Length: 140
Image (tube, rainbow, N blue to C red; front, side, top):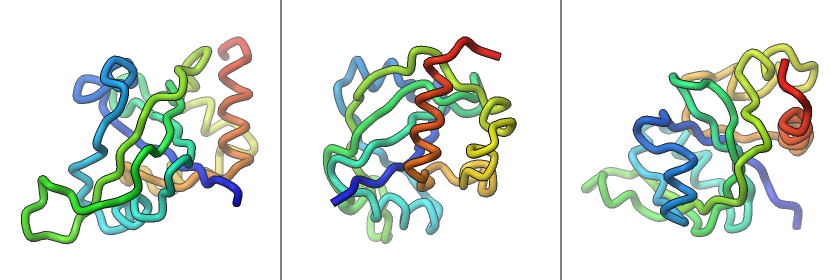
């Protein structure tokens, strides 16, 4: 079965990709949007995830993998929220900036750009591959 792809956002001062690498894994908690929660619940173990630094940096900086599927968020006592666990795969060769995503023929249609307030969104296989290809090229 083909793996799905997603993009998760974090403000680097709160939890950077470097911190994920240092920790080796993280519980992705605190999601309080129904649409983002449903995206978390769609994630399966082994799915690959683009890691986006929001607010500061505004760039995709790494690839992570879902290491544990959705379960109840322990920070949401009595409420119906979920978490997943992620582990780092690798940092990108270079960050892929928001402006590059917007300017790219394939990436300009990403869910992240159409629903910018969501912190967890699906990514198509073509979008995932395009981001990895951009990261291998010299910056703009």
